[in-house]
Length: 127
Image 1 (cartoon, rainbow, N blue to C red):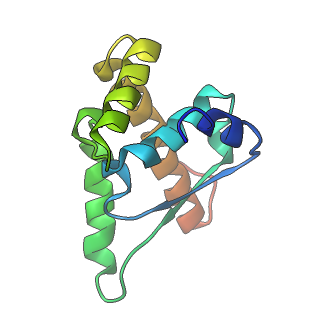
Image 2 (image 1 turned 30 degrees about the vertical axis):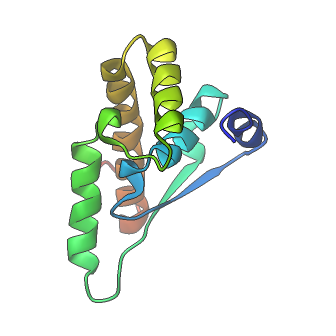
């Protein structure tokens, strides 16, 4: 329920994102990240876990990277057209437009990619 999502995530200390090839194409998934940040969640408390298929790890990781680079909330899918319209309206109201939201979420996604790369490398350096 969209009305309850901010309440659910406001009680979370951490957000774990199991990100597969289609994660950023699903509007509800994007709204979870949006709500977590808007409710005061810290970027450093979001953990990105890529979900890849056996035998296609490289292709799936490249697809996930592409989805991060090319993210546009207007292209996200939602089962219910009414839910999509409502969520996009909320985003437009909060950010003044979808472009501003895309810019902000792109910064979040860049941070998550960088933190995931650091963890994968086992260091505190900038990859």
